[in-house]
Image 1 (tube, helix red, strand yellow):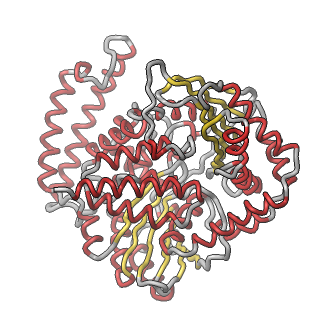
Image 2 (cartoon, helix red, strand yellow):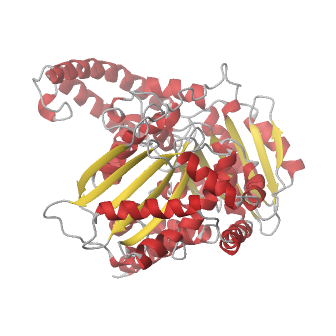
Image 3 (cartoon, one colour):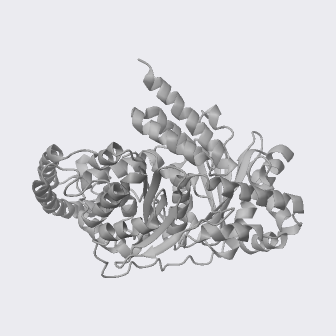
Amino acid sequence: MKRIFPALLVLLASASAGWAQKIPVVEKTLPNGFRVLMVERHEEPRIAGGWVAHVGSANERPGITGIAHLFEHMMFKGTPTLGTTNADRDRAIIEEQERIRDGMRAEEALMRAALRRGEVEDISSPEARTERYRELEEEFKKLVEEQRSLLVKNEFDRVYSTAGATRMNAFTTEDMTGYFIEVPSNKLELWAWMESERLLRPVFREFYSERDVVFEERRMRIESTPTGRFYEQFNALFWDAHPYNWPVIGWPSDIPAISKRQADEFYALYYQPQNITLILVGDFKESEAMPMLERYFGRIPKGTQPAPEVITQEIASVAEKRYLAEAETNPQVDILWRTTAFGHRDTYVLEVIEQLLNGRTGRLYKGLVLGRQVATDAGAGNMSKKWAGSFNVYAEARDGKTLAEVEQALYDELDKLASEPIPAEELEKVKNNFSASEYRRLTSTFGILYQLIFAEGMGDWREINAAGPRIQAVTSEDIQRVIRKYFTKENRAVAHYTRKAGAVSDEDPDLAGLAADQKPMARQLSNRIRESKDVEQLKAFLTQVRDQAAGTDPKRQQLQKILVKKIEQRLAELAQP
């Protein structure tokens, strides 16, 4: 399974935009509730296939945060016929593991009680474990070893790869979990069987081992990075009531506490047919594909109850929030405002505002970096999600300039947009850039699939056809109205990051040109590329980044070029004797 860089997928496709021309999507619904989206493209003998489960971290609750992302991992563990040499004994081991885990959970409750009484400092430390917990842990380890002797590692991936499939991956966001792959056009039936099998008869083997893998992923992505924990806490400060206030990967206390029983209940509720959309793009005929989809996916029983919507809405903010942090990073200012959900009429205006502010020709760079020279970098980002949204502006302070100066300079640029009409040629340039980006996205079968997964997961695939004309209709008056409405003092959270005493900047010169919000992800991915020894994974990631480069805006293309360079350098190192 090529999944060491799943978070990048969301980053590369996070811009909401329309299309220069409409994508001819055929929409169907199977009797058991699956929605099906199909786009025929016969330019090459390949089919990009995927599906989106309409569930993300926003659908979780305190105590099981991170479970949606955990399922992204578990859905590759196989079926009774894929992943094991002895399905009966494998199932018996899983049942016995659950019996032991019930006992371990009872002991964990005693350990948490001891923590509350101050008798232990950290229940994750070996010293805090009860004697009975240690006994059960040894029993569990023996079962794990026996199960490993039965496993056929990565068989799901191997079956696909042997058939010529590529790009198998998955991702989880606050709003969705997406799965995708590209297969030769004569392997559509294999795709239908493989994907329907893991939905019909999934086996969550190695559940607790994989849970530990996710916990380690959290440590690498958040806790081991210079600013990961700060960004996580700033996000939690920003959202008061909404479930967007916890991280997609989950809180550190929740991940190791998730039980398989809870996972089974979560799966039954959110992975039922009426909560999943199947998507095919490429070299097939709809008249032949639909009977095949009905034959395979029609086997899956319809769910007994609808998956619940996210009910909790964000409460109105009555005061500005401020977050002051000392981190091993360059001094910078990060500001967030609450805005609109995906598909809201003001979302298109916010997309235009982002482009007016962003990039080397954008107002923030020209105003703060080239003009006032108070910053070394500055940018903006609109983040409209399924249930709510936010808008971000940021800047990295130049040596000798205070964060207060940088913050005020950001507000001044926004005030200009709100009070002065945007020149027609400036607004037209932004709209032309959107049109060019929309056209590029049409050149890739896989790119179309991914955009459909993303838009459908956010609420409605039709946005990819509707957004373009709506962006072209944005006026200077719309921009002024939206800034005055959302960009208020009471509606914002402001973070100041100062360099921790004694910290030395070890900035990778390759990352110097990136926007401030991109650097943490770039550092993280660069580190993982440098540490990876898996040539095939690196090659797959290289192909993925190159293919998506043409379908993203210039800001993201800069990040992609850097990643390509890093991967090529690492592959060259691994090729040396």
